[in-house]
Length: 429
Image (cartoon, rainbow, N blue to C red; front, side):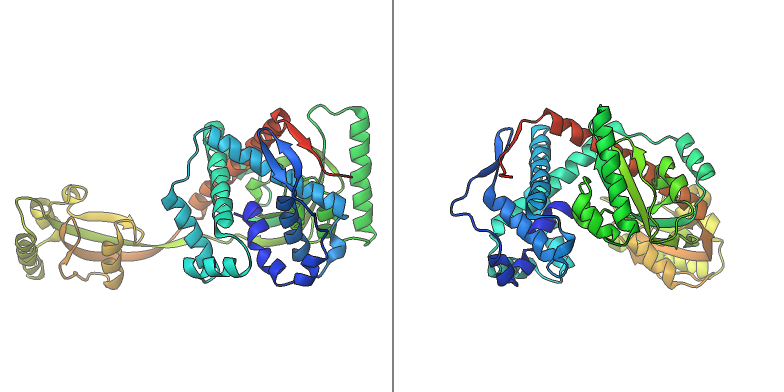
């Protein structure tokens, strides 16, 4: 919840700096600064959002663009939020009260607060709780809309995964990237292309001459939705980076900046912020034998416990676990295998089984223990460290290819709803 909640949660710093808040221009009366289909953006909404951004950069105000440019950037973001929320609701996306309260509880927990304490803090800072609650709900609606778009439009094939693993030169590395975007419309004219190219080349020259660092340049000049975050794209595995960019950044060191790149949405500059090794992926697995006497309408818990006690005594006396399990166990998943559970991670069969198997030594037989299914015995057979790097790489490739395609699809979707919307911006120049 970074984009929308960033406007709101940062108001703590605004209330803590009244002098800077008072320095912002005041409007005598609220008025409309944008009409968005059947909705509007009010001057008060824009002022709150801009004030939050200004306070985030209170120590480095020179990194922000001029006030009129910043207002237009933030207003465009508010417009896109309204369009997404309206589309989500129009397509039947709903957030239940229980989901909303759970999300708010999570936000409070991240700050080390209870919900009551968060509410008190918001109240002390002059933020109406209902306004905060509505903002969280809107962010959840946007997340759910993006999930719906992705699920309906994005498919990752096994051949795509194979190709990514075979052709990715930086396999095993993760890269943190940032970008600056000078966007172009769908079918740009030659003049628009020349203007965009001149702008991106000028930004690159400013960075190369040391007149502005990459983050400041992104905040001031980028057309990307994450411009106000310095263009930060976060950590990405190599297979999550489009091939046309991957070949360019392959040899870059942290801090290096690419030459302008023409992409599907316009011109971009990319920088490598950090690199790190993904490392081998290992998990601890256990192997065990299992026996259960089930509890049902016919067999009570006391009866099942009595039977499992007798079975344990027979095992201790030397009877073979596999032969006994094939005859006596009610566990249909393992009975035919003589109780063999195979190799598994500690929580694969549930918390209760996991707690028991991790507490045993190899060859040790557990005491009877109960779950909602019945009474159980576990005989631990072995423990091993399993290298799942290849499986993890495939899973990561699947996830990252899917995420990349989802981002591309959602970017197209946002362009579409923005183009189709009636937007009348009424900011004074």
